[in-house]
Length: 142
Image (cartoon, rainbow, N blue to C red; front, side, top):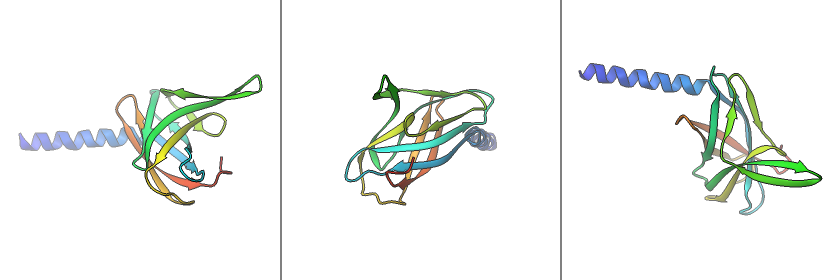
């Protein structure tokens, strides 16, 4: 029985690892603003799975709050809306970039300098969690 439980645990770990392997994040950076101003997070998320995935949020030990937003421009007016979730279809890529989807990271928990590494965990509707290392970049970084 003990062997069966151990084998089940190993198989469950293997399934979790494979599932995360179907999600790839690249170009993860934080646009660092001075002081305690909110920071924008940009990245590219690729879903290599045969099923869609739904990103429901993110969290970081370096920020008290992380939200997903989408910027838009209508009739010459810029606006930003809170987004509760974003679906990435199977085999597709979604880019979080200036002027579109982005993370808003608020209330820094530690001082950050250009080049610092910040851990952010992306959260998905199916319970998966994908830890990503973001690099603090200057304001001009998009």
